[in-house]
Length: 281
Image 1 (cartoon, rainbow, N blue to C red):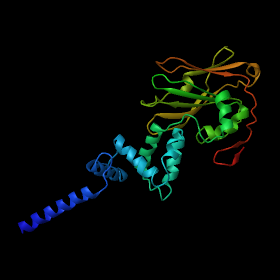
Image 2 (cartoon, rainbow, N blue to C red):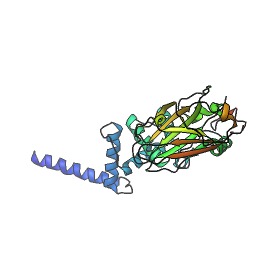
Image 3 (cartoon, rainbow, N blue to C red):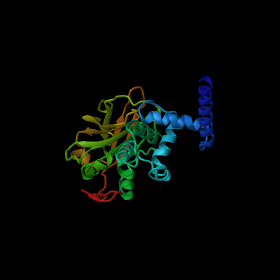
Image 4 (cartoon, helix red, strand yellow):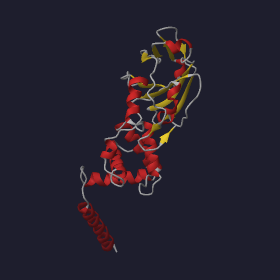
């Protein structure tokens, strides 16, 4: 009986060693390959919450670049944090992708960390050129905190669905700004930006923000998108002004100042055809 048990154990060990030898080794060798496969399987069924960087990249490669398309389609076209979340969520609903909830969260975080664009990618190039030149302002970050501000006068409110998460054109007298706040390594503070932001016309008296509405926030608290509103600047002195400034004074940080030249010219962007096709009014 003992000899049979010992023989069975030896046979099982030989079979396992033969399996390890015959499998195609990964870059880190056969043991690393098996370890990664085991971690990915456990992660798929929520038995492991976090993967190490190498395992996370392997999950991305095996899920996004082998079943669907090559990696150049992804890596040569950075997207915003929101766009990556929407893309992965949409792909997860397709049977061929077979992405679980935990896997999707990990892949989204990987793409947001490694292939991020602060600029929405859905608009035509001509529209984006006008936005960047006339309406879009940004800074280069301090303490790993980056602001992107888009001023949207009334004539450009139809662009809101392409620039702000789940938003519709707003026909109001308020001055409206779409704000993106990003950090790469830290966590965004839960600020009410209306308390720390003001605008002024031609260097005159400051006007405090009326409201800050958060539209989107990623699960890592690295990316936030919202709308700041102010009293109307399109009428009265604002209509004759030559410059507009926004001043953001984050707690314990230097003041950030963003400039626009007024008036904003009419670029004829009343109808927008997205890169995916279709006209939006």
